[in-house]
Image (cartoon, rainbow, N blue to C red; front, side, top):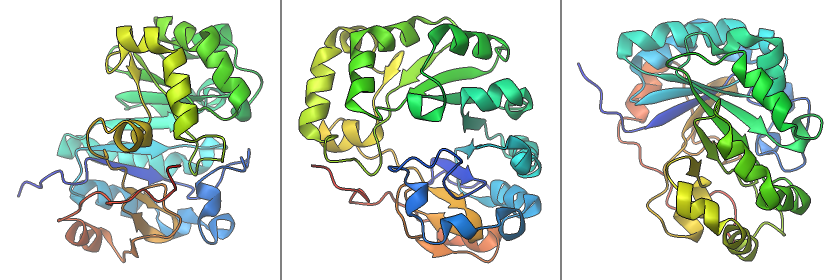
Length: 275
């Protein structure tokens, strides 16, 4: 029986908690009990694979944090289960993880790498290009995800770094990422000012090689509806939006998840303030 892809992209956070960096703005850090989860027991590879087999999704996205080896069994189970449904799998991680564990891209059709100074040393375009070149292959789309983590880094992006990233031949597109929840400085006024500074890049590349953050496009600029980012993570928790702190519900098995998401719709209101 065919399943309507009402979920769009279904995300898996195989850790379900903040990574070693512990950014103060991390939405995973806001989840209740996030530091105490043992996902390998709560949502093991067999359950993850069954979710992929049954969930009404169009594609699958898996976030991998350090150490990647802790999540290898779960990732491989997801990747192995996806072809039976014809679902592409995207991996989101850091350049450091890709460099240390290039196997994280095995079987993936998309690789998204976080690009910001909070994930490691100062962003080095040449070093990033070297890492991406080591895993580039036909059929693997590569996306750079620069997060505007500080006003200073936003300045650097606007002053030329964003253009450098867009120009890299190893990168298929660049997706600007806003902080969630947004700090006080990261408000509507900030985003409109930043977009004005990169207007030339927007004119040339918007929705081709340059994409905007979901809440910036949908909530601030009104460019289409919320794209929805449902998420499965530790404790067999389902969130209608990955950014919400509390789960929408906890599911016992993949059958329950498929049943309860069959009529899924994106949240009407963002789980964080739009100032």
